[in-house]
Length: 243
Image (cartoon, rainbow, N blue to C red; front, top):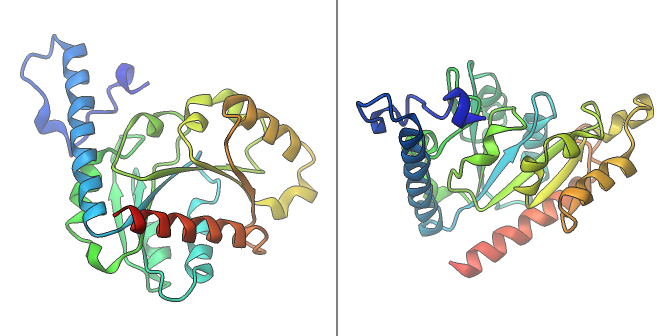
């Protein structure tokens, strides 16, 4: 979609544009290429400091920020986290994270429906990576464009909420193919939303990525949070061992 609507041209990468506006395809290919170079640069920063980076993606309102708030209190003592928030406008989500005493940097994208590697790199200037074990990057709520942009993350985590419908993996397969972990969120609402079937959701995810691990959880009542935290702890340990 970004190749058509031009939303991959952001304030953070606009300086990479060439003057010849007639060569649109070449310009967009150049931006994506430069994005990948910047993403590798970001990843090198993370690995230098032993930081495990999770890119959290989903549609709007799936519970990304609520999940992060619950994660703050569920992580074992000594495991330090920080958050980069992405939204078109406002610092609402970053403020929610800061209230828990966790560093949070807000990226406001304006009209861009995703984060790119240049935006994330600029945000890193305000983070002390040496004091972080896990960096969560909450991408803009969108089930299309974020999957196309490497931002330097180690893993993509996809949220599918009970309130969205169990057919979203079938409708937006590119997003779910890009994931390393799917979380079915807001499971506390299952008794009230008869239209959502966990079995159908799991089948739709398997049809897109047969090997995709899935965790059902609720940030509200804590169901499944132990599995999520176990996955994070293991991933951090694996990352530090590799470094």
